[in-house]
Length: 433
Image (cartoon, rainbow, N blue to C red):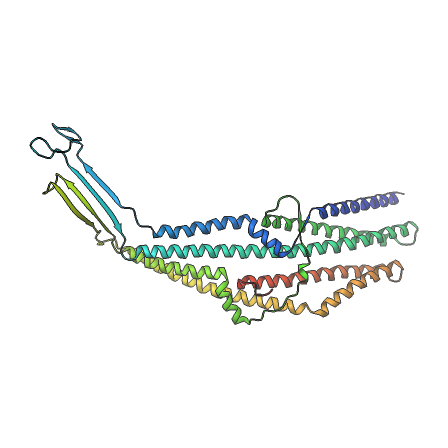
């Protein structure tokens, strides 16, 4: 009686969990957002907060080009007498005898940068703005790849959820039948516990899959700037999209990658910047000239003196030697970094190309036909067990094999799409559609 009561409680608990699962599925269905890749990309480009922030950074660096083109403001120097003993404060003009009663001095000076400093500063600002644009492109490509991969994984996890729910429903039916047979004394308690263990394992697999879905949905909501508990799924099975090898060979793809990969282009731009910085530091060794007119009343050999002032520092001790030497070493350092970036790009491209080639070879029509046949066979095996044509051990072995095969099929489909996205990311173009 104790065993029977515990069994009844277990059946009630399983029924309650199944009902709760169905309610949750109905709720999720009403809050599900199905997106095509084009729709998800469009929302991502217009709503993603990281992209919006980086866009303002690019515009800020572009504004610095205009700032670098501006001339230095002129300097105005004014000097006048404040107090003359016996004559008072701020006395100007002439006395009754025609003598000057005060002195005024006015000078305007303009700094003129020599040695190409301003030209090099403008060029450096332009290169820095180019680096900022490339960094934005790199972020865009990285987030765009994350979005596509998350959508692909969302499709895979959704298919796994359907698989686990399908198997769990069949196992629940099987468990109810075994429980009836056990109560009738037709099967042993060992067989009943074996089936109940299968149900529990499948429930745990389903729970793990649900947790993975929630973690992935959190990333998708951030990428798409969505609030609430909306479930985001692709509007069609992206895993089923056909993938073929690119028409270009490896050498052609490497050339395209060197022209379009933002990470590599950033390294090249930074090398250009260091070369310009070296030229700029050499230009700083050239003294700048300050020139301007000046006017002096009543303090020179002429009552009203007009002159031209020139100011030029003498480069006797400080000729910017240390900064020039440091800039030379920084250029060599960046050259080594650029060479390393080129090697990394070639290595990443070859690896991504081989991974895609392997995944394409695995996704043969014969394999797809095998998975379809295996799916149809599962229903027949379940029916054969209910008809007592095969043993429980044979059914369990096939059930484990069926779940494993179906999961591997979806993982293989996901690997194929991820390999395609990885190659596109390295090249910097959607070379594989």
